[in-house]
Structure formats: C-alpha cells, structure tokens
Length: 195
Image (cartoon, rainbow, N blue to C red; front, side):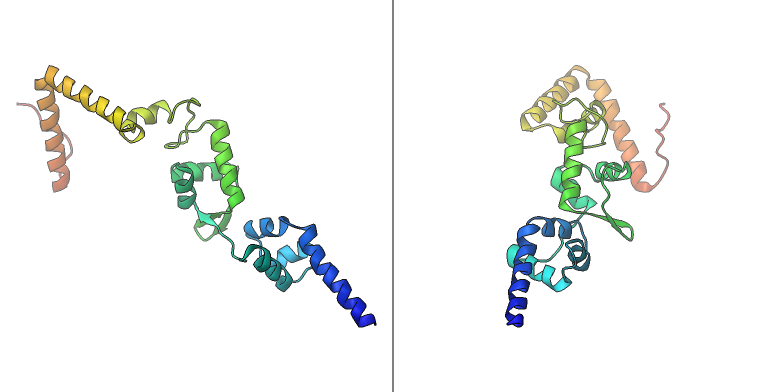
C-alpha cells in the first residue's frame, strides 16, 4: 500500500514540474544552462527528468545559440554594431574561447536596443528614426542603402555631371586608373606629378 502511495506521489511531482514551470524550463535551457543547473533551480529535479520533460513537450533538449555574425545577419545590421552593444554591457552572451554565443533572449535584447536608440545598422551611430542610416553612412554607402529606383536616379545624376564636366571626368578617370595600376604592382599610391 505504501508503494502505491509513493508512485502516486511521484506521478504528481512529475506532473507538477511541467505545470508549475511551464515555459521556464525551456527558457532557462535556452539561456545556455546545463540540464543539471536547470533541475536544481526547479527544486532538485534530476537532470534526466529535465531532459525527459524538454524532449516530450518541446521535441528537443538542444540549445540554439547564435554567433555574433549570425545575430547580425538575422537583424540586418553589421557584426561590429552587435559587438559594440555587447561591449557596452547591454547583453551578456556566453563566451567560449574568442567567440560569443547569443541566446534568443540576447538577440531580442539587441534588437530592442537598436530600435529604441535608433542606431545606424552600418556603423552603430545615432540616426533619425525615419531614415535607414546615419548621415555619414548614407553618403558613404548610399548605393547599398537605396532601392533600384534610387540607383537609377544616381546613375542619371552621374551621367548629367559627366556631360557637363567632360575634362574633369577624364582627369578623375585617369587618376583612378593610375592608382589602380600602382596598387596592383604594389608600388607607390601617390599620384604622378602633372607635366
């Protein structure tokens, strides 16, 4: 009789783990904590029981951590901006060797920080909320940041300038060719003196 009572108590305890700590188990696991630590935080549950619960209710016990490059790609920003946010102490990803690994909560924190502080996706500088990049990046990377219609406008501006200033255009082109040739040869990048 006592054995049956013990089995019922165990069943209630196991059901209670899932019902009491519904999303907390997977959330703690995705923060990168080992199964043993998740179990001890839940009140002394074994590593194996945590694994069983995760496998049954989520289908996996794996942790999905992202590198800084993957986070940057997912958010559409530069890797240097993600690293700058990490160095600022906004998120504390796991550090293994020379690499940093971000949990899904870390990714959401980075995304929220970028949105709240209106940071440029290229350099991390401040930008106006309505623009896609800060003014310095906009001028430097305008081609990358514009759509096809905007690129066509830029092409038209270049063509009209070339037609208005043919001598200056030839001078710029010859200087660019000279620099390119010297760079390929590994020589001096300084322009040749005009004769």
